[in-house]
Length: 196
Image 1: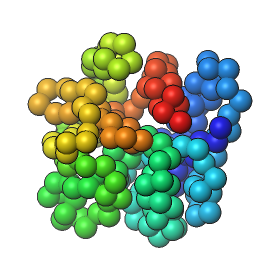
Image 2: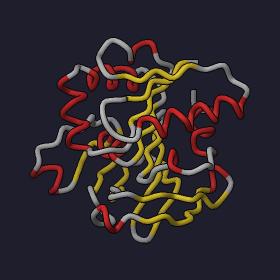
Image 3: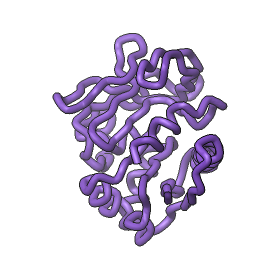
């Protein structure tokens, strides 16, 4: 099993370590590839779009030719996990902040996102949220986090926090507004790996 982590910018190392722990816990001999240029995505069994600064991440994946490869892979059934900025990139629609900055979206998941829904960097927080598909409460870290404000019919909402949807799945796409890679709990990485 080969999982590609888009490694241009953001929480790359944290995802790599969480995936390594998950491989060990499942007894799987897997390989994790840090993707910084085009040509690597087509060889991956799954893709992780990490958190980071979504405008920068979007610009660079388009510039490097990685965006087209991600779109093609996901449309052919390859599982993708998008966390925080990765959730933003997966979305079909965004709020006025996304429109104003002319941010490119991959347009793969039938969701509309609101960037920085929970405030600025100084408003970051950790809280327990209920995610029934992994068995209950999860310690979610929200850092300048986005949120889902609308879901299409094919999207399953996996978790909510306050007025917002913060975890959702559509077919082979898993989108999280928070950072599961920043905590010791690997249940969401197990859930993602089981999608492969």
